Image (cartoon, rainbow, N blue to C red):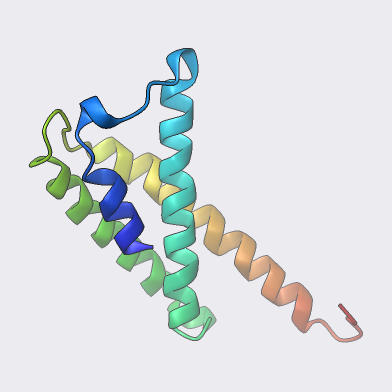
Length: 113
């Protein structure tokens, strides 16, 4: 996931598609999805231990910060703390919350799913 995020954020602005009126929606949604998947993979790598969920979130935020710094060197791109604080953070939090709900549901007694 880190490699995919790096690959996409390495694209100069003139190589990125323009989605007209939906451009901001699609690109910010992509932030949320990418960092949501990254949060899941970090937590999975940490054994899905509930006590380490916060650590997965911290890793996501740290990676998001380094990725925004990296974008400052890509032609036509610029770093945005708002991407980290809103879209990347929200994607990670939603992913960890949904995954936790799923894990809890699977552990309930009598659950045959």
